[in-house]
Structures are given as structure tokens and as C-alpha cells.
Image (cartoon, rainbow, N blue to C red; front, side):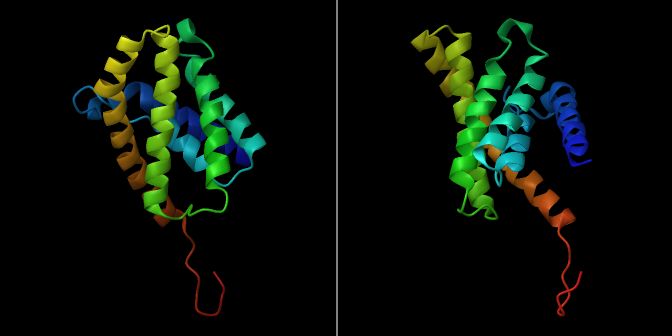
Length: 165
């Protein structure tokens, strides 16, 4: 049941990413919901499970772009491994930590994507990185902190003084 719920959430995030998110773009820069979901799912997982989740989310995203099939699966797998290794034992409940983690994840995702899309053309890669990637990373980090904070606040159980729920 848990896996089915994650698949459903991933599909909802993908549909939102492809249809609604461009309406809240600022200066042509939109947040990346799949990165937010990836960080939320793999933050407290081991590296093997994280890479599997990252690959599945990336492959799902790749299905909409046949020209670069596998690019997002590769990028999300690498990011998932890094997030799971960095996130173990640190401050996963800290909003600042999650925001920085999302920011770094978007930057790594964009670097991998730009390397593949621009065919290692340094000038095109740097121009796109400084024009879009930095702003996208900041925007996604802010949206991610808000979304993760909202989800955490609405799903948190209230514990009574006697220790029961």
C-alpha cells in the first residue's frame, strides 16, 4: 500500500510539473517538483533504496522526453545517492538543512542535464547555468521548504502529555 501511495504521489507531482507549474514561473524559471519529492522520499533511506527511488522518478520524468531518455534517471539516481548519504544522521528536521539540500540537488541535476543537452559546449552550459539554474535552484528550495513544512505540519501526530496519541 505504501508503494502504491508513493507511485500515486509521483504521478500527481509529474502532472503538476507538466501542466500547472509553468503558470507560477518567475522570469521563465519554475520550481522542480520532482526534486522536492525526491529529497522528501530519500532523506531517511539507505543508499540502495534511494538510488532505486531516484531512478524510478527520473525514468518517469524521462518518459515525457524521448530525445534524452535516461538523462533524468541518471541525474535523479546520483542525486538520490548523495542526499541519502548526506542526510543520514544530520539535521533532517531542520528547514534550513532541507532547503540547502534541495538547492544543491537542483544544481547537480541541472549540471548533469546541461552537460548532456549542450554536448559539453562550455559556453552554452555556463550561459544556461547562470541564466536559469541558479534561480531555479533558489526558487525550488523556497517552494520545497514551504511544501515540506506544510506536509510535516499537517501529518504530524499530536502527542498528549501521557505519551499517547
